[in-house]
Image (cartoon, rainbow, N blue to C red; front, top):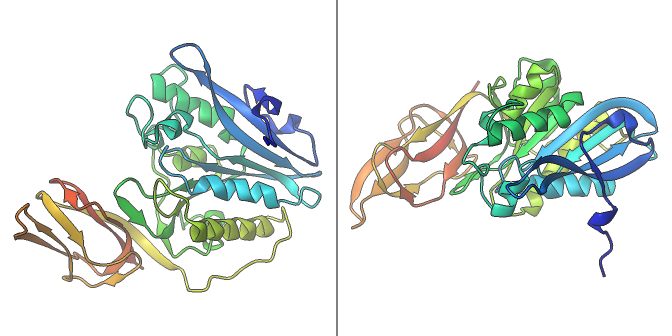
Length: 324
């Protein structure tokens, strides 16, 4: 039996929180653009507006169409919200990049990474217009933003955060997530987090595991951090959970790339500490002969790594975080 019907979900042209009824949780389809047949492309939005006005916290997921863990984080959060006690507004966007989700692809339909071109342009190409409308139809009225991501194809991630730790509000948002690792990373031009920062919105990027799958433990961890934040902002009384292990804070991070192609094996696991000079990966040719060893250039922690054995010249090997 079909319990919920999409035909009962209101279609809107723009998110206007002030017009949404207080004390309700509502679902919307936001018309973001139209396809090559003139059919509308919709983005799903959930809005919980408390009876009392307060801050607006936005949660976004799947700006890359193969990054899925953020979707059930948002779904479950809205199932658990007690609207009678909520102060302010919670906005959840389970899928930003709807066309690519359906195609199971990271990039937008024109091959562009949406998270490299924010805030887009109102008169630009296909991806630029889509990006501009995300920011101006949804994001711009938020007070705070958590943008949920995962690793991309062929890679795995720790549960980690990118945040500007020099900003006290952002720092607190990051620490409350109980992540394994936080990387100090001021907002970059072209990212959704960077576009939010330009609008005065405090934002963090939350990397919740691996692509193309749902990981129950990490989804639960993501929910815990958001509940901690709701309590901190005074939006909803929650039982704040402390991290089981101390979060590792990195002053910076970078990827190590291969300079030759072949069959790649990366030795350390995610969250392992490595020492400068330690062998972190080897590449063999198709006959199985060792042709190259890669060594850690500095002491650090493994934030993410490649798990795809086939590695061309210039392929990613390991994401190394440098501790404070």
